[in-house]
Image (tube, rainbow, N blue to C red; front, side, top):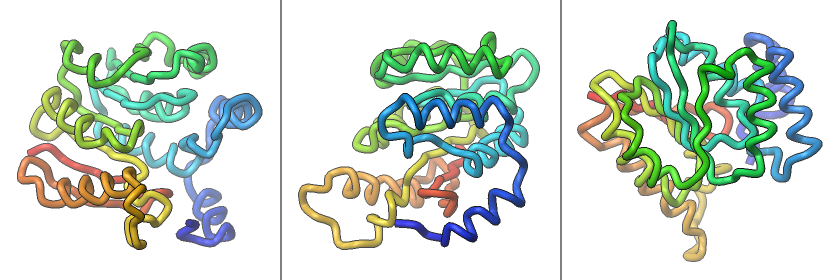
Length: 213
């Protein structure tokens, strides 16, 4: 589902900060070489992530779901001095393209890539995260959130992507559609969870911003 016309989407992008050249190149290579390129964060949402990160100026960032590294580079743009980003993905086949563009973006030393199950990796990260971005297996969103929350402090921000799920969250849900059912429960939980203050933003496919109390 497209929430806005392509004309409006283009207008929004044209009147937002420009997409850095290295990210243009990464987007192009992703579309040429990687399956399901629509999973890429993209220009507009990438600039949203970048600006949010710059406003927060995090010392430590946790990203759950790396794909080809586009969002990691955007988030890393806001790291404070000597800051660091940990990103986790199960697909080791994308490691090469990730590392290539981390280096080209100048963020190679500020990003650590972990390959494996985030729920196994997060408990062993001896960090307190100021900013978390969840964009991985939708059926595990609640588990990712709970694991990340244990590594956050009051004032930390947790971002959750794709929470509108192409508009399926407001349509009749098939019994076989587990992902939509999980996201419906997840969205309701975040809106009512006393541990966080949440607002759901209609950015691209839905982006939830939750501030830890």
